[in-house]
Length: 80
Image 1 (cartoon, helix red, strand yellow):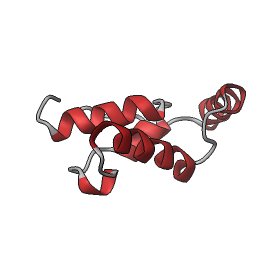
Image 2: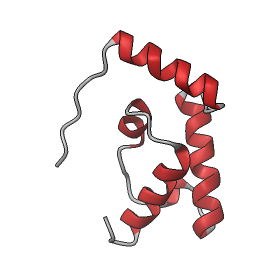
Image 3: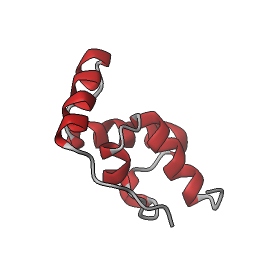
């Protein structure tokens, strides 16, 4: 299992600036909606219909929503 370290406040601020500049969602709810949209386009279901994965850790780590959607779908198919 991968261990994640907690982000410092400076790292969080920097990540938020990057998200704003790139037009990425600023909060977890917006990010998760984009993940759900991606999952829906790929397999026609939502994240709630897939096995649990560490979405919050992925968001905090700066993962793009489409990458998280792909990982979640791959995991549900036994590929991750």
